[in-house]
Length: 230
Image 1: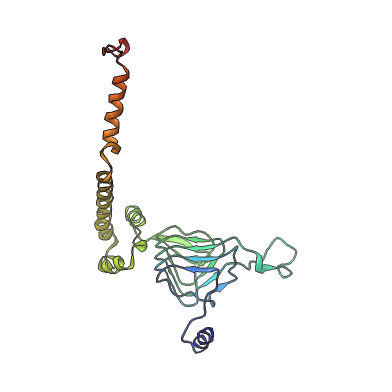
Image 2: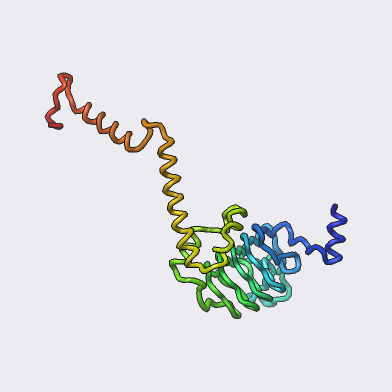
């Protein structure tokens, strides 16, 4: 089996495996061993689901050169890193962008072509340039908060496919529709869970029972209310 995989790779029918220290979520594509440099156990590359990486993008997990030493040449640069590279869900990374070690790119962010990302990118931010800087956010704060709460990328694939028309539509409409549905589902689930509890374990029943016990303790042996409870 391994021989056939190597043959397919040489023929261009299969992209080289990115390595054991690269983790990708569902449907994420565009990452192979040609655009991940020096990923290690201490500096892995982690990508979420539904993230697209364009041709020529590069993740430099380790291999930096120090500038404080006498020379930048006589160093073991392969082990120099700022930590893992973490890319969220539904991220778009443009052609020939470079992501340096220790960087976290938030959900829904966009990295422009040729950008050099040396600092963290917030969710749904659009960054361009060298060094990469935020030029705008894809949506307003309320829509961003809604999308981060809904987290459609964590849905089962069947649910994602069923909602594809909405996912391809305006973000505000999506949040309005699925944010309301999410709140209703949470309330319904809580109500169903409460209904399934035995009567003696329901919060309202327990509070009444505790009140009855307190009143009972306030009575003396003759059945009269004590002075402090009168």
